[in-house]
Image (cartoon, rainbow, N blue to C red; front, side, top):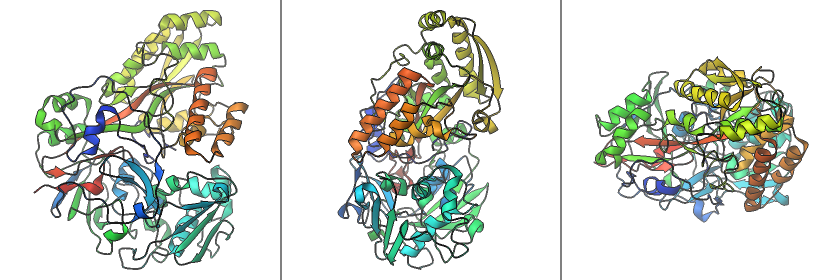
Length: 597
């Protein structure tokens, strides 16, 4: 699931298969950034599939960052404090980025110095060995992998990690693997192991098997060909069975990465120090160049961007903060500042959902699609800096996405086509149709909503705007009976597959309060196609089929209108090296950072 909470990143990890377009120079070299100048529209290259790597590619140590040195203290300027430390509860972008330094998983996403991505074995010796047509996956743990207290990580810990996900207190993290094992979605998956393992029960061996200390076998009733991707999510980070304190584990987890938590003052600061039990020879993706990270919170994006632009502390960096629109132009015009920037695509695509319970005529939905002025919606974020117009539902970085796809001319005619919209309304005898348009009170959404309402009125709609507070925006639009006709939403993929985009948003069998199917689309053909494509074992074929299904949904049903794909521009202090944009984090990769001197 990849919605943005209050229009801010609530991710899910980004697993995208390339460094895109003109951003390649910035994303692949330490320090980043070439002299590319301000952008208005940078089209992405076609994404390629990510390789599931073998044992050789999964061995450590990780490839050295060019010019890296060891030592020093790095200040990190973050806006949001970390609500969770238990990996099972982590799903917010800022938390999962930090977690890449302290929590290891069976698999991880590796970015090499040439900008190529792959899924490798992290705690496991490889990305997984599959059999039974995708229904059985076997993992073998590496030797000499330990928690911070020196205790070995065994298959019992991995089994416990998975089993505790069924406990009632685990509510915030990803649910893919536990639902796949239960072969059901929603809250019903907890019936497989009610309460988790805390009363002595375990998942049966025909579901999850640990025949020895180093072997874990997953058994599914259906092919689960994306398991290596899913297991790389922070939510499946290994938890110590011996040190598990249930809810209280969220305060003091047993870490397994190159760093451990030295001190955490919630809402104020966190210090990460070296974990001397981490063996770099077992880790193909992480480094530990910096002696200590000193993280402080409550740095608004604009404030941190201005501080970094001024180079107030040459050793400072932000992991999840973005350069705001007002500061971006100063950054792009300053040659020195631009040499310290990186940029790339975030996972999120903004779209305008159309409530199909209320807007039943397809011609009316098409009229909405043609009328919407996408340029005006993107403008508050900064065209080419904060986002890029897109014509389809898929993020440009996803395999199967076609950057030229634009059936409603949302890229070629970003001002909207009011004339075409009016023609459709007249054809449907629907001129004067009332549209209740809900939008959040966030500043950017407020600004865009004025142009949206104006364009719809010119097309012939009777538009009534409704403001919804930012704090509970998604809760409100997530109500099936919300009383509104159109409302904006943002969705991001969990890994590099449209399987984490199309089903969550358009599977009619998942419609309920809180569901991501904001349009309430329930189409038999779409539901059948979701099941069919999910079972495809060839990733390249599946990617093509997902794009085809997305095309059918957009053109033949039009439950939502694509607006733009989010982008991210970041700046670091002049003494910070190893600044590389990693699509998994939608920003800088903290595991590569070092101080130049």
